[in-house]
Length: 261
Image (cartoon, rainbow, N blue to C red):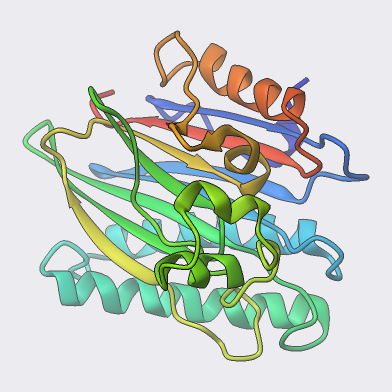
């Protein structure tokens, strides 16, 4: 059964989330969404398992990122003006998130969370482009007629191994170092996120997944997707259930985003 206490979707159209504790003692994932003056935001955070207050960190960061984007949009500070202005804005929000997590846990490196956020900009009633703000090993996939395309890098030891050519993408979850993050909110290095811009031509749907979902569901053939439309309550619940069925030992959370809704 989906853990509604770990989601703050707030009735945003085109946003469908599911989160389950799975085999863990508590759910340390959190999903948050918002829609402000033609800017839509979806965030998935995965609190650091075993870290002090990982569940608090994930909720605080997810909600804080959404609120940070809302504040910038409503203040008229020019978040739409250029790629540089948006990047500076995101970095400022992430910096505040680092500070808050460190206060929650008692210092840098004591706790933390991943963050994978999608910010979609609309104009004249239609979507124009989307920014991905990402740190850690949760993932963002773009969905098109050809399937699911991974749009983010895993900031983990095994993710580095993949980018260095030592292992294949589908081998990341089963390789040593898959659970050792090299970047996260609250780390000692005050790491910066990857920020990228996606032109919305072929991609009209996105999936944000924690490693508890993509780990068992991304095999050599790619990411497993349900037969029903990806952006629906049934689909996100199916993906979480399938991950648990396939042996996930982590919390399992998915956020599906329909750009056109």
